[in-house]
Length: 408
Picture (cartoon, rainbow, N blue to C red):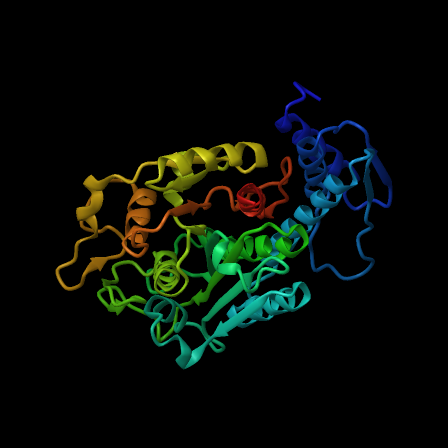
């Protein structure tokens, strides 16, 4: 058990889960005692045991896993969190010939109906104000992009919801990213792009768990779903689009599409939702992976106190974040001769792609308490290791759930 820390309990749990993965055996663990230990250990066992495939023939066997404790509430809570993580991973692993924006909307509606969550889905002409979402998503075959809004309000609080803290989470939902006209190359860079909707998956999975956990917080999730394809209707470098809210943007690189859909969602949230806390989560930049590897997500916010709280939540939840700087000296890289902004910081040469992407998003958040999570490194794993199966990790689910519960 190493030093007995939460990290060690998670590592031991993941090792146990991997041992019984795909086997019809019963595993009983006796080691976790406190509420936090039980949750950390039990969730990690289930993550280690996770499998997903589309193979035909005999289905994989499933292990039965039990935690020996009198604290049944903590075991039940761990089960809810693990199920949410399974939901996120299942969404991410689904191939993009199945998973288009319409499919994402249908899956979100199934979850919302099952959990009693309010849901609204916009498409076609209803997206007239969403210039970023349309610019990215109109390059794909039908059915085209979708804007999905899901709301959780605790039981019995419908009339007094305005008195609750309101958390809004905007998730990048690019169901496949070719890069568009700025085509990704070499092609190996494209093979993992079915996971470019991992932010939206984490946001949806998070809100799916809340009706079972009942935190006294109002939560709204905005899923910005589009496919960045290459076609005759693709946006082009030098195009100028209008983001939600009216900001004009010069397109430089069509492979920097994630910030365009997120900016629409952030601006929508500011104009319509009055959030107390505004988050966005996205597999946004390779620069975040170069800087932090695959163990930490890049976290950006001007709110130093909130950042410290979130770093602590990341450590305790097992989804670690690193507070990154919003460097104002880099703002000039976003200037444009023909529009309010250019979107990929082409005017500068600062070698800080994750920072300048965050600076771009900051233009759309007003004076809100805003936090940007770049999960390009942590959102997917190249190998089976520890808690992670090869592919989508579900990063962000534990982080958001733990922080939302802390507000309650």
